[in-house]
Length: 328
Image (cartoon, rainbow, N blue to C red; front, side):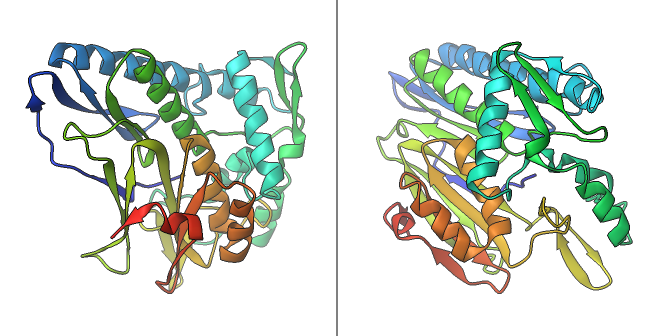
């Protein structure tokens, strides 16, 4: 789960020259607000291409949504512990990548954590903590090792009844990446796909300057933790700024550690910059659980990605490569 902490910093000129226009559209997808910004040769062309990008993300939502009963992922969840379910190759490959993210983060990222949603509620309805017994019972249904992929028959099978997988994190990043790819293939000059904070961008603003994104610092309301300039890349932020619960005077994050069943602690926000919003989201989510030291060690293995971490004490920590990408 994510909230939006990254803001586009740009003056929205509808037309900078007779040859280019910038078109902005807000829509609701995957239960969240998405914003598509395109720079195109005309308003009509921009509108047409925006519609196609949205249609592509709707198509993905219909495949992987775990709250739409007709989706393939919902069917996989319904048949957990019972039988394998045939899925599209696209869904199979996304699941394979999710399992790989679990392996490289030592289980800090795990799409099967969705089973924990039964005991942790962040919709305002929860006023007492789950018992340790309830947590341990839920953890039994968490574990990417129990997701079986049959590439020959193109099926997914959750080996334990009560298991559940969900793509609420990397699903939005994947949709943003796919929409960006489509827009580029359609000949769109530049654009941004903001999938509720999972952002994929390409090209430049109409004035030729890079897209600029401000990273919110929850401890400094009137200032940004950093401002990032991008011409072809992605940025995602995971954190508990806006989604949390207070119980017994203690603040609990909505990001759950798949291994312990308890909310993450120590970090308030993690921003990752790199080529893919899907990968960046997997890293930002997992580093919220791994912490600063292990998070930095993880990113060292993937030099195309860099990070900014905000601790629960308000300290802002940047990796060396992140320093090269930002402007104050």
